[in-house]
Image (cartoon, rainbow, N blue to C red):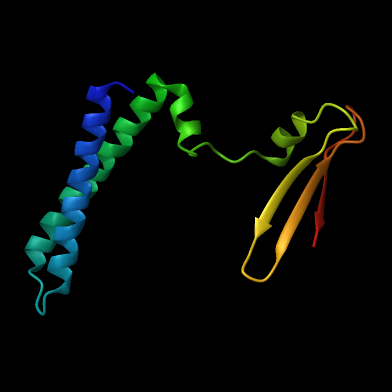
Length: 121
């Protein structure tokens, strides 16, 4: 991203943060002003939409940025299977919870077979 793009993104984020803060303050009052709250809500919604539109434009201009930020869509089972080209390759995915760790193993016996998902506990 260019310096100008980064600065614009920071400004959009700052606007959302400031409006969110105003919203929280108004809500926390003993008797919130409903018209003021409605105005801040509308401004916040507008700011969020502006940010989303900007983000879409930035990702179009810088295709790798979404991936770098961890914003890419998860792979479907078939998309992940398409990355496995032989029976010697597997794809591993871990899920760690408070009490357990799960391992999912994705295999493909050969190029013509469908992908297989095996959970291991």
